[in-house]
Each structure stands twice: as C-alpha cells, then as structure tokens.
Length: 413
Image 1 (tube, rainbow, N blue to C red):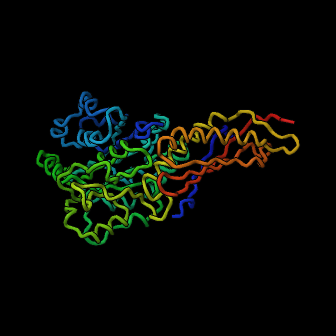
Image 2: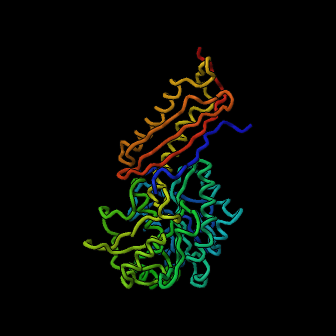
Image 3: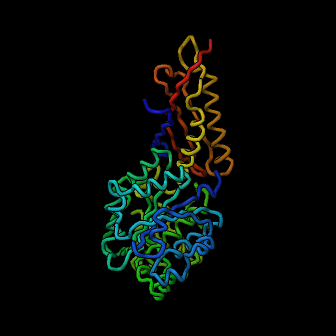
C-alpha cells in the first residue's frame, strides 16, 4: 500500500474559456560550455540573492567578456526587476544539448534532482541556451522549441504531480518572424511552458561589440524571469502600470526590429503565443505584448498568471491537507459516513489558509472549498475535496480535486 498522500488534480473548464518573494523563487537553467568558467561549479547549482551576491562569487561583467559568457548578463537582467533578497538559483547544463535532448527521456535527472533538493521552493524556471553562433541553426531556436514543447510539458506535469508545480520559460533564439512561423498555441497542450523571443537591441549590440558572439541571437530570458519574480502571481508581465522595460529599442532575437512589422503582423505573432516587446499607443518605451503559454488561447491556463495563481492554490492546499494525513476523523455510526462537522472543519481550514495567503492580498477574488460528507471514507480511506477559485478581477473559475488518504477513523455515535 502506498504511503498516505495528498493527490491533486487540476481541472479546466471552469473559466468559460506565501509572500511575493517566495512566489518569485526562480531557477536560471543556463547552457555553458563544458570547458568554460563556472561550468563545473554550477552543475551542482548555486543560489544568489542579489547581483552583488553573484559578483562576490566571481561572476562579473568582466568574466562574461573574457570568457564569451552570458552569465552575469542574465543574472543582472533578473535583478533589474526582481528585488534584492529574491532567490535566484543558477544551474548549468552543457550548451551542446538542444531542448529536445535536454528534456528528453532520462535527461532531466539533474534538473529534477535539483528541484527535489529544494523541496518545492522553486516556482519559476528560465532556460537560456547561451548557444554558440555555430549552433544557431539547431540549438534553442523556435524549431527546437517546437519539437520539445511536449517534452517540457511532460516534465512540468511530473513536477506538479510531485506537488512541486513550476512554470518553464524557454528562450527562443534567433527568431525571425518574417513568413510562416509555428503557432505555439496549437502545437500541443503545453500550458506550463512559455516562450520568449524579445531582446533589447541596444544592449545586444554592446555585448556583441565586446566579443560575446553568442549574444547575437539571444532572447531576454533573464529579464522576463526577473519580472515574473517581482510581481504577484495574478499579475501579467504586460501590465502597463508597472512601467516600460527601459529599452531604447527592441527587436526579435533574430535581429529584426519590432518597428518594422505592422500592427496586424504583431497581432498574429501575439495570437501564436510568443512573448516579445512592443510599443503601446499613448505610452513611451517598450512593454511585453502579453503573457501567453503554449496552449489554445481559450484554455483556462492560456496565460502565465492563470498558471501561477492555481499553482499557489495547489501549494497551499497541499500544505493544509498534508497536516491532516493519517489523522483520525469522526464517522457517524448510523451512516458510516463522515460527519458534517468534520467536513465543515476541513473546508474552513483550507478556505482560511487560501484567504489569508491570497484573497486578503488581492491575488484572487474568492475561494470556495466543498467536501461532501456523504462519502464512504471507511471503504476508500479517501476524502474528496473540491476547491473553486475565482481569479482576481475577472470571473474566471479554477477547480481542484484533492483526495486525502485517511488511515485512522474514530466513531461518533
């Protein structure tokens, strides 16, 4: 018999289409040459809490330039938006591995082991290829992304099943939006994956001029990861009130200027699920276009904020009901079912926890937990719990189903 556990199933169809710092704990999964500085050290992972923290470790702009790295640059971009004190874990992989290999069967052991060692603390993963120009045609491009989406989603779903839900943001390198490009929304149901193809044109030019050739095809993965880490779970990275990106000019990772495309062409790219930088009428500067994930835009989890919101509910639910595992519950001797009082008590525990950590902080509008007392707990050793969440500001409704294994039962006459 399996150990007592909380089993959580996230259900769609209800939408009709901790602290901020804890919610922003991130992992930068970065490709490095096996012979490069820091590669062996970062294979085991390292956590930083500020750019200065990383610089004290030895990761500096100078080491980037001297070794042709995009490491300090990625960490610097993260902390442009993320506040000091936000944890950024950095883990290296061999940049000769494309995404299909990296997330292929049996190849996610290092990443999975690191996530397990952090016991669910990491919520966001940004994958940066840092690819050499000689590999630009095959490594970490949109073709590679397209072929790996299902693999990345499978990995992320496995983490969800372990009660360690994560969102994975992939760098789409060398992206040229001219002509036909893959529709990431319709390729597969990768609701836990997002793809970034934006870049700061001026900064990219500076990096290439300093001899970092692999910057030429890079996307702003560190910046997106840092912005996600800085905002509450229900908020979009495209929110205008948060201010512009601070970029003088913006392009796609392949070098094409955003301004050279029509509104219709940019709308089409938006509808295909890409995250890029664009201008907004009436505002100065550049902003992210939206927050799409790689699933149909009518799906409940078509936006990053939807995924992050429900992930936080999952974590709270797991924490609340884990404390109830193997505990005694009262059973009505005349019916053999759980008492109404027991059901209400469990409902209130979860609602209070979610309200305290989310509703009262403005991250959701409401939560409703339902436990039907007419369950044959004696026969199944299981309590089924339904949790419905109304997303902040819009009447979008998520549902969770939780099954709690109960080993001890006491009778109430």
